[in-house]
Image (cartoon, rainbow, N blue to C red; front, side, top):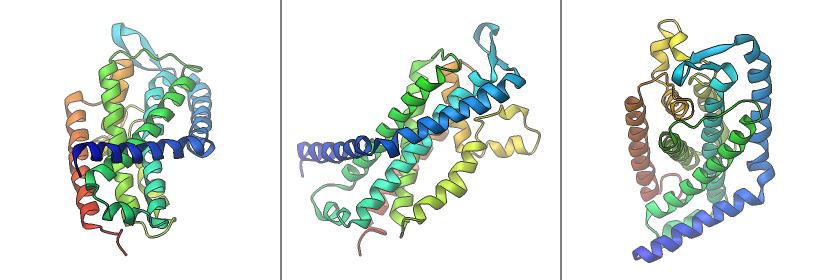
Length: 263
């Protein structure tokens, strides 16, 4: 299969994912909008008004609690939806058995993986924009470093899309795709510096928090929007790039060998 054919195949898979997202928008786009609105109301407006200033921004301007958690809430929505989109979509392909048709076709493994990841990243982007618009109803967003903001979003969405792909490959029933988000993804997200400054934690919890990859994503994204970060930006990018390379290689290997896919 030549390069032109690969691009057509990639575009077809990505387009099918886009149509799926938009067709069931009440399941893919509406729930995160409602959930994040509740987060902003409860944690931002009610609790945040009692906490006050969280940090000093660029030029010494005070950063309120709701302003501080806004980037974390946006990133949390991106992560959860990029992960959830690819697990449900690719497992559905396994369940309906048409994934086997893709495996026996001339399409290379990277085309299949890239198509599903593109769909997951797009859903993360759409949800991220929705949550960003909601956040503007409660606080202000400055966007100090657009390049950092966009690159962090892309890396985080790709990482959790790849993780979701691994989950979908090994899942044997629909209940299996809910185990990781419930028992791994949600705790890591809540402990990833979304609602607090990791520097305020006592030892050893502060040191343990640095083992959480979501902390690096949230901190880098917060730097892009607010100009402040709990983590050195270089380390954040190194961690994210390492996860992309490692998970990408793992997914391609599993897909090429047909692990959990061929009956």
